[in-house]
Structures are given as structure tokens and as C-alpha cells.
Length: 293
Image (cartoon, rainbow, N blue to C red; front, side, top):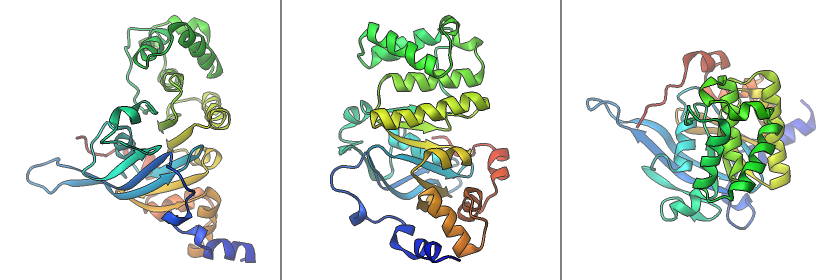
């Protein structure tokens, strides 16, 4: 083991960040001891979906969240977006408390889920126009911006007038991403955004995410099953297991840690297996198992 690797694994930077390591000023996203449980059966105790999770994400970061199905990833995203209420803890977005300043927070964020909802009979252009009106955007400017975004994502003008229900799942996911980006969110929550996309479309979306961060200083939280995608896009990665945050580091330091501490190959797949106790095949095959509220 080289001296450089040894120093990287033994330095404070290789452990969970602590409060005094963060820069001054409000975080883009501050999640402080967030907890959520679900009552799924009156005869059984509640199921803990998110268990005392604390994360701080700075402006302009792309933060990846990995975990096996049922680990709490999607529940975490719903908590941050205000779709679910916290049972304990707090969430702040650029200094705005999610509970006390809900509307201020919602103006700053947008979310893309793996199962995006649309008005299926309407076209992508009509769906995006509706979203623009909800956010108070100028109609003409919204149409121009929507066309640019859709073209960048590989959706041609001919498809803009076709009902969403006639589009493939992958193409619908692109429309969902375009709809979220249209509102210029300061914090973008991407819950498995490239699931169902072909390799070319996946690369288009990944490149666009990088451009958003570089050109617009957007802060992005990304959940994904694609470890290569996480490695490429994310400055830091948190790993959830059983609703708890079991590891948090840069991709490179996660690889170094599992190699030095556990003698495993220095890969994100090794880190995933070590900190979740699951294989990637288990994660893909079992399907999402988080309880519904």
C-alpha cells in the first residue's frame, strides 16, 4: 500500500464530514437528523424508512445517493421535496426551513422521479407549457427555452406535438427532465433519472446534468443504480442501508477506503456491497420495496 493511499484513508477527510469542516453560509441543502417511519400494519411496529440522516450539500455540488432497493433513497427525496412530512429532524434549502417556509423552498427546487407523472393525452410541449404557467414563467420565453432543452436532450420538434402516451418510457423520462429544468431550479432532485434510457440518451442526460452544474451553478441530488454514472457525475456519494447513512465520501476516497480497510477491489461496486451488505444484482432484481405512506 502506497504512502499516498495510506494517508488518504487515515486522514479526517476520509470519514463523515463534521459541522466545522463546512464553509460559512447557508448550505444548498441541509438535512439534520431526518427521520421518517411508516405504519404499514396496525399489528406491527412502524417501519423505519429514513433513520436519523444528516447531510449537508453545498451550492454547485452534484451529490449521489446510493443504496439497495428499500434503503430509503426515494423516501429521502420525497422528504426533501416536501411530498412527505418529517417525523423528526429538519430540512433547510438555502437557509429556508422546509416546514416554516414551504413555499419559498418549493420555488427553489424541482424533482424528477423514475415514474414521472404527465397529462398523458397532452403533448410534451403542452405539458411543459402547463408547468411554465404554474411557475409564473412568460409563455413565449418558456416555449423558446423548452424547445432548446428538448433539442439538447435529443427530442426533435416533430415529437413535441405527439401525445406523451405514444412515447417510449425512456422518451417520457427525457420530457420529465426537460420539465424540471425548464423552471430553472436552484436545487434539482433527480431520482433515478436515466432509468429506462438507451445508452445514447443516458449519455445525453449525463452531459446535460454536467452542463447545468457548470453553467448555472445548479445543486443536484442524484439517486441512481448506475455506479458508472455516479462515478462520473458526483463530487460526493452517500450510501444508505436500512434508512441510515453508512458512508459518505468522494468516489475516489470510497474506493480507497474499501481497498485499504477491507482488502476489496478499489471500485464503487465494492463500496456498494460493503456498506449496504447487498450485491448490485440484488438491488436491480428485487424492485423498490419502500413502504407507501
